[in-house]
Image 1 (cartoon, rainbow over the protein chains, first blue to last red):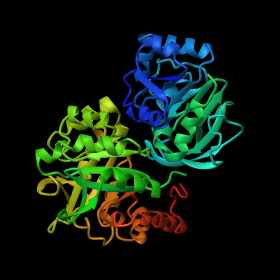
Image 2 (image 1 turned 180 degrees about the horizontal axis):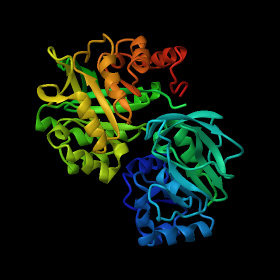
Image 3 (image 1 turned 120 degrees about the horizontal axis):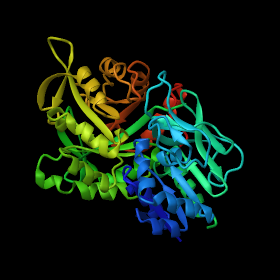
Amino acid sequence: MTIAIVDYGAGNLTSVKKAFDFLGQSAVITSDADQVAGADKVIVPGVGHFAATQALWSSGLKDAIVSAIGKGTPFLGICLGMQWMFNSSSEAPGVAGLGVFPGESVHFPSKVKSPHVGWNALQTRGDSRLLRGMPAECFVYFTHSYRVPVVDSTVATCEYGGTFSAAIEKDNLFGVQFHPEKSGAVGIKLLENFCGLPC
Amino acid sequence: MLTKRIIACLDVDGGRVVKGVQFLNLRDAGDPAELAAAHSQAGADEIVLLDISATAEKRKTLLETVKRTARELFIPFTVGGGIRTLDEAASVFAAGADKISINSAALTDPSLITCIADRFGSQAVIVAIDAQRGNDTGNYEAFARGGRTPTGRDAVVWAREAESRGAGEILLTSMDRDGTGSGFECTLTRAIADSVRIPVIASGGAGSAEHFVEVFREGHADAALAASILHYGTTQLADLKRELAAAGIPVRWPC
């Protein structure tokens, strides 16, 4: 099994790769569209500005991702990668997201410090293949200034200046706002669950 | 609710963890990779590795140490000490750090903050400030070169500038309290935490669980750093978190 970690120039992907190495899974950091389209699993990580996701469109990576998703390949967006799965972000008006989930990513209200940095509790809801085996309330590590709304596919929420989507899941599409690769044993369990999904 | 973080700090000299009192009298405290893993296991929310090697020869081992420490560490990992350029930061990130901490180099050239933040994101850039209270003014002054060189800059003003240039967090060390175990300097911490909109990590002086409660309640810190109180027996970290939880401080416990 090959896991493609999509490299589009948004931040440091070493930690994500390291977590899969630890799990004994073969993951590659790649910006090659063919490799992404042919992978058994696809991950779009990323930190930083929403405008960075424009590189996914211009490089042909977005088409490769759409083609992989169309074949049923499990897809996981992490942090900025999850925000990209929605329609848009007020951080970069005019830059389109993938639009597989409805809504826009917006900045935290000014009543709370931003970025939201640190360990916060997840409230899980409903059945989730990604969060299987995790406690109903557990702590995970966040670092972000924008957040996505709670939608029908939300499987975990988090409270910080209001409620937002911490994890989403629908068919072969998965997204997490937090960093599983930085969330200790709980996060490793989540990545293990993702690896165990049927390709 | 967002929890208050307890960050275990490893001061590293030539690839070994050491700890001093008020920046002096260093004692050997173990292997960084082993200590980082033990702290993570015991409930540390993050690990900070500060390279305090005085010589270039010793500093060469840093990337190897970072790589070894990062390999099986799955909580946030910050590396600081002697990072002077974007290229040096990039090689530390490539070795497995999630964030870098800069101090003297940012004081010399504040544009370095923006330069690293543009490339790796603000969340990856911590500006460390070593501050000491002036005898005459009562204001806090920022020091460079591991507390050796006074800069004449007001620590609060400098923290605000660091934020505006793209720092994602401030790591604030009270030089007067460092390694003394006599408690964090809450006045300094609060002055800075209330002046910026980014998280402030308090450092210097941790000696007991009450000190942590104080710096979160009175000092308005978002996180607090502990070094010497942790190295000689890591079960203390679990005890610390249990005591903080009992005192009503939101912490990640049980992990």
